[in-house]
Length: 230
Ligand SMILES: C[S@@+](CC[C@H](N)C(=O)[O-])C[C@H]1O[C@@H](n2cnc3c(N)ncnc32)[C@H](O)[C@@H]1O
Image (tube, rainbow, N blue to C red; front, side):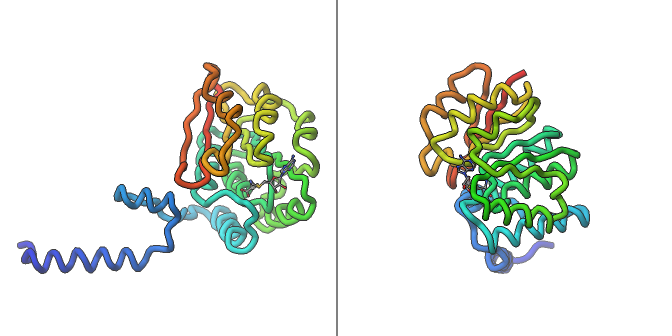
């Protein structure tokens, strides 16, 4: 037999209160999800390797963020890279290695490699130390220098290109590297909501029938996900 309606209501509000008390402070994206009645949990490690990488990711997020992507976008990068079985990911804008660690979490499972570009030596060094702490440095090539110049040395195929360096440079990065992205590969661009993106980049990935682009997590910085069609 069920509870009396008043008792049921009391149980329900106690349950909701306990959920609210248990929640960490919510990001805008998490709040938006919450309003729709669903919310992703923190990522759960399925192996000691994943636990180690996730613990470094959390540590970098707490102590060493420098213009790093929000956690939600890091998780998205990992999901995208792992789901396409990426063998070569190129990142423009290493910073302290936060987004790189999410990508490397995927690459540790796919057996792939990350090439990441940064022109600030100090941040490059911090990123390298973080990759080492996470046990994934052997999967990463950190290139120091102006990405607009250094990327000319890259070779095809790139499975996933992640653009997150100088915001006015996105169109040049796209023009130089889209030809190296394999058919069926992805071009992911950060800051498609804030700061406002270069409209020429948005036009290039939305008006070309060779691509299909959606914009995600636009409540926060915003992420453009572009498929280079087969
Ligand atoms: C938004 S931060 C990258 C954040 C990083 N992707 C993360 O989420 O952890 C941008 C980085 O790109 C670097 N950067 C900007 N322009 C660059 C260029 N032309 N070449 C190489 N690095 C550049 C900056 O020094 C800065 O560290």
